[in-house]
Amino acid sequence: MNVLFFLCGIITVGFVLCICVYLVLSGLPAIGKIGVGEFFLGKVWKPTATTVEPSYGILPFLLTSICGTAGAVLLGIPIGLLTAVFLAKVAPPRLAEMIRTAVQLLAGIPSVVYGLVGMIVLVPGVQRLFNLSSGATLFAAILVLAVMILPSIINVSETALRAVPKEFEDASLALGATELETYFRVSVPAAKSGIATSIVLGVGRAIGEAMAIIMVSGNVPNMPKLFGSVRFMTTAIASEMSYAPVGSLQREALFSIGLVLFLFIMLINVLLNVFVKKER
Amino acid sequence: MKKTIAILLSLVMAVSLLTVGACAVSGTVAANGSTSMEKVIGILSEQFMEDNQDVTITYDATGSGTGIEAVATGTCDIGLASRNLKDAEVEKGLAATTVALDGIAIIVNENCPVDDLTVEQIAAIFTGEITDWADFGGKGEIACIGREAGSGTRDGFESITKTTDKCVLAQELTSTGAVIAAVKSSANAIGYASYAAVEGQTGIKVLTVEGVACTSENIVDGSYVIQRPFNLVTLAEGELSEAAQAFFYYMLSEDAAELITLAGAVPAPQPEEEAGK
Image (cartoon, rainbow over all chains, first blue to last red; front, side, top):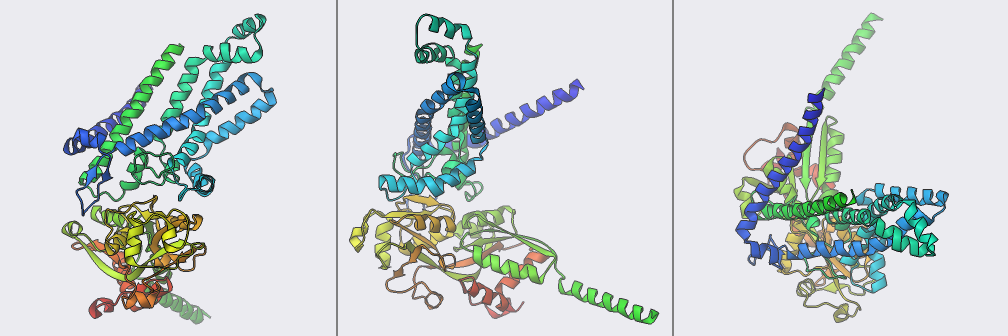
């Protein structure tokens, strides 16, 4: 029986290894051919250009992914953290249960549905509100991502806040601190590694998301501008992979973008491990 | 009594033999490609499947580039491309057969006051030289909505307006339907989409180009200049499956021409021997 368990474990490891090796093997050559500097710092992505020299700069995608994720986290943290404090400390049990169910439901909504609602409701809304020529912008993508990362921030932060020993809070209250002061000066600092974990999880979800934002971001490879049409690393791969001819530099460059994205996610996982270890 | 049963039985058998003879072909045909050709392929495959009950035709609306790539890699039987093959694609051993002609309609929101543009004006708008509707008596910043690089519609539009690789877009969408939806929802938008797909749509307005309306007659006689072919892409060497072969010839036949017109495109004139098969 143990052999079976071992085999199952090996299969999982095998998949991870296969994907890693394949991604590195198929992603590296293009970076070499294009040149590291031009690939990472080139501002123009035009792999199918025929009248001018094709160019393969992914700086617009890199910066857009970073800006989009940062924006989503900046919006998501205050809302998510305050919701978590409310659920863990303030809310009456029945109300907390209701809100918790709603948050879990939010986590279960498929990303394509987020994109659909974003495209039909949010994009025209943004366009009208800011009087733009087109509402499919980085701003709309940030809003969608912010909502998408709320569940991971709320769930993990709430668990961390609940784990803070009651004695800490009792001591603070006994010393004359108000309840609000106790939550933000005692409970939140005590749960900080858990909260950091939740944020890193949120970043991971935001940077890897493709389906929801492909429908709201406009998909033009511009340098990031809050009210301009942008393309993320994920959506660059998703929108071009199907027609990039096998063996072309365009296809190889898309694999390279995948490799860069993969490295980003690895970095985030390493960070996550650091925080989890600290918590222990 | 026995005799009657015997006669009946043999009749039944004869009829079943006949029906089997009529739908000699069976199998699956996988088609993949242009989203502009959706209506044309939809109506043709429906009729063909009606006539040949044992054939299933699947159509994956992905874009011309994807369709061509799928034929080259062998993941579909017939590729659908709303543009001509590039030299590199012909070298890969692909061949295109034109099944219909289609106009690329220039569409704006129904509230846009502009009705007519010249090809030069369209090019100026899409390359970002003209950025405001005020130049044409409207108001507001123009939002150009285009297609992804693999699109046949984009290829046709850019080569005719001579804006290849020069378009400055506000949105780059991946299907004909998405472009129409985006133009519908934005008062300042201008986009391009297959004439077959924009017919009968509300909320958008099809512009006349240099005074010529985008209609079947004007596409056939060439007076509507922004047009391109609908192509069937297959391997130049190599056999199609029996079902795919039958569907291929059916699409080029006279029966199909009527349906193509019904779908809003213009049937391409076929050389005699090929249509006769």
